View 1 (tube, rainbow, N blue to C red):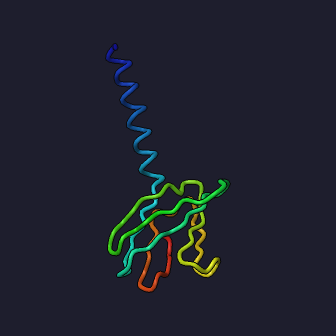
View 2 (spheres, rainbow, N blue to C red; view 1 turned 180 degrees about the vertical axis):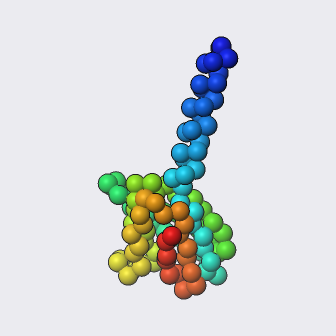
Length: 99
């Protein structure tokens, strides 16, 4: 492969890696118990469950925007998350917030 082609390929790969990282939503569980969060991505069918251990973090792609649900009561702990959000925090008692 020529040097020019190698440089172009490296640029494309680096851009793809940065785009993926930029779309990742960091979920921080500040609660003392483990939680399962169900995410529904805007425009998608079905939901994705993300398990977050007490005091741990997880990642989820919410680049199109999404709705997060925590707990058994539908609607009680739902949070609409904008595509520009970078973090979701689970506070004590299982309260969700996004920034």
